[in-house]
Length: 380
Image 1 (cartoon, rainbow, N blue to C red):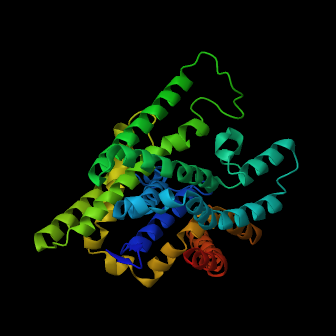
Image 2: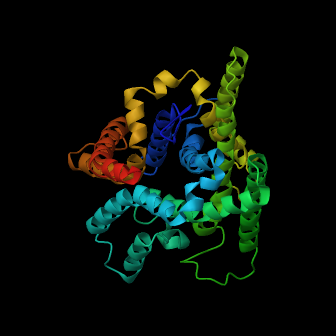
Image 3: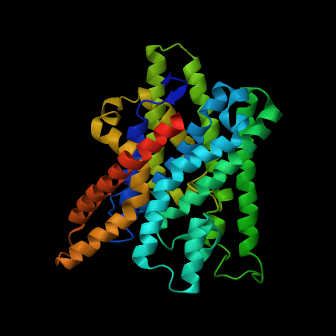
């Protein structure tokens, strides 16, 4: 690991993001064509339904955003200039989202009823995660975007409370773990109470017990984000410790591969349902912690030549675009295959390859002509 010009640099990061983006792509293809497969132990269908790719991005978001805090708490940007911090996050997250949203609204003519007009407005205001009918409506991956934006609002407050209470990095780390448990407990109480009401007082079109709005709320995901924030402290300690003996490198490699093994076992077997606490997301806290460990110790994994290779590195660079555009691209390819008389269900490999290449093309163009200039503007 290294820092360049005060910016955090994690070797293998783009490769990890690429793998997560590919997992999300394949996972969401199952909504278009049947996908699955089972061995004596591992179940590919369970793996696709686990949401491990999205979990990785949530953990990584908290992890990267808070590294500057651990390096210099008093001069951390969200503390010094919170408005600037939020504005830069808007510039990174929203341009591709709005491009895709506008294109889909126009293509679908998503304004022909009062419900569709509401749905479109909610998506533009980034509040569609508060309404059941709007949660997955226009483009299913969009549900995570308002969750991210709401997390950006919570982040400075969470870190400020932890810092004012703990003062030292070690105490802040412990407090963050405590906050993570508190957030899970709050979500548990909300979800538990909702399903046990004798009469639901709200309109179920907007919010219902055990629906998406409650089970996938920002409160439900805050424990995951905060685990990422706390995990960044371990990277700070790793950088601070200059010693790098062969035995220490071996230990880090063992931790990395053990974490990967646990992630795969939990995500691709029935252990997921057994180990998940009630109303938790992504087998909290085990899976988020394993994701953090895999990020921290990837440098010692022996995989850097692969993760830093040109193709994976590029896919990691455009991974956000892949996330935003992959479902519309898959659906567009399905329509084209149907038009020329090729069955997507019987030619899933063709669908996967063509859709992924199309997604890469769209994401690459957006990165080159929009994201990259914007990032350069933000850096200045």
